[in-house]
Image 1 (cartoon, rainbow, N blue to C red):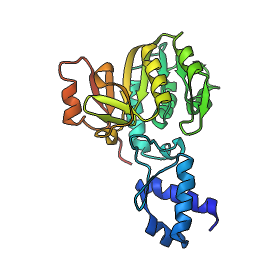
Image 2: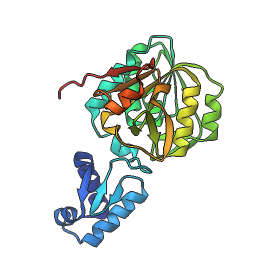
Image 3: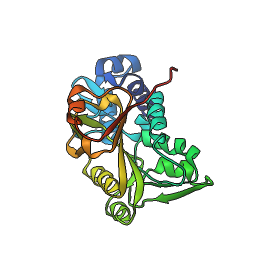
Image 4: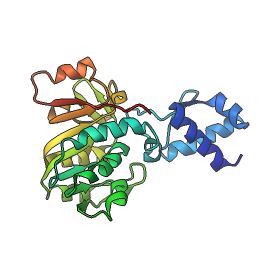
Length: 257
């Protein structure tokens, strides 16, 4: 099997199982463990996975989030459920900010049913999907392109946001613990925070698997959001942080496959 084919098979297994074992990969792909080590090293440098003892994972760590190409292939039903619930906060004629992320990319498509609408985004996936749609005023945020996140970040992005005022911003996070949402990349954090400042309402979109984890940078307190949408009730520690707070918690309904 050629190197690129091996790496694609490793990616496919990671999408399916979230973690892979070094010995199992060597046996499955009929190569030495040293060859698998090199393949994993290359994929780690590309930001696709995180090496751990005895294998690799795509689960987020304090300084790691898997590549957009991995995330967009995962849990489509959960993302669709959360995006559909988020769309209930949007009315035709509103100006909506949508951040980067595979869940946000699905939201961009779901919101086409809410036209006429203005969408402000740094997500290349949303730009590609909506640029030719009628009834949509698409404002794209410039900046430095990140293939890992399939989105634009940096000073140009944040300066553009400082000149805007939106009705609602949809923000995603790869980790939340207690009463705080986190992200491992400071450039991404700055842009998400700039989006929150540019909007009158802010809504956190977060997969329930992301709770109970932290990352390097503090994004915001959960109580900084006007609404939180997830696919399961919040853990008690996070729910307790919202007591006596006006934050709405909405649980999305996942359709059976």
